[in-house]
Image: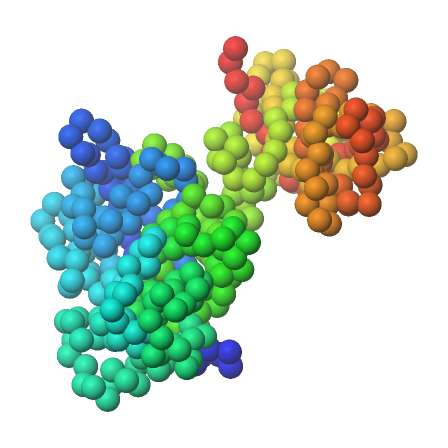
Length: 375
């Protein structure tokens, strides 16, 4: 796979399959029935808070942790199950660590070539030089081969670590929170660049992170992890707009849960909220609402900040409780007459004061509902 922006260095990407992986450390269950599947050339991400098991899952794939149950397959080869165990150095897996782990006494070219000197496949000096130049061009660091790590920025060090991992043409690349040591403003931009690089190289990759914006910028599929298992494995779009559970909705993006009532007696089923009515045009949304409602038609609706629209002509008023300036927009926390709060993204030229009532209305493309929690 080649592009004009990145020189082609495609190897042979391998698919990845984790089936019902379980890991225990003493009495602690760290992973439970964790399952993930990536096609060759696909980029996946395990997303979750600290302690959810995502780094342990990555270490299982790399071969640093042996699972107590389940199967790990890379390409057509089973590398771990009850009867098989392939050592890490024979899995053809590249790893980019959180701290980059560059050798301070080696220059950029020597760092990148390290895996070519010490890997399972011998490379001649001429092959190593050509390969180093290829991957440095891929990660946009041509001409920096003689510099040492301390002479590079954090973003450049991360690119060198990526080049070193890609140099031996691994079938699978693992990335362990690779942006955590970088400035927040740099992370998302670098994640998008990294996606371009991996796609240009045709590399299958699995990332672990706690940052949803990194995950959304980089991955084709994202798995939200909870207590050692994947709660939902899906596209970023569906995770945000159609989360399977309240916990996924809470973790992915911002939003509010508002009490609502489902009305099925009309020709067009609707959901009634304190702010207004929403028509259930999508059959999937309607079926979900039917499953979520109790005997009295009561349920909760998830409202994202972009579902609540500021409208001066609306009779429905809400009071500005908090505001956060985001350049082009304000993120307002608005109090409804009932005391319930919702979030709204409003263009920043609408600069309202705290305590000021403003008009709002609903404009939701996806009507996402959940059963009301028991008291």
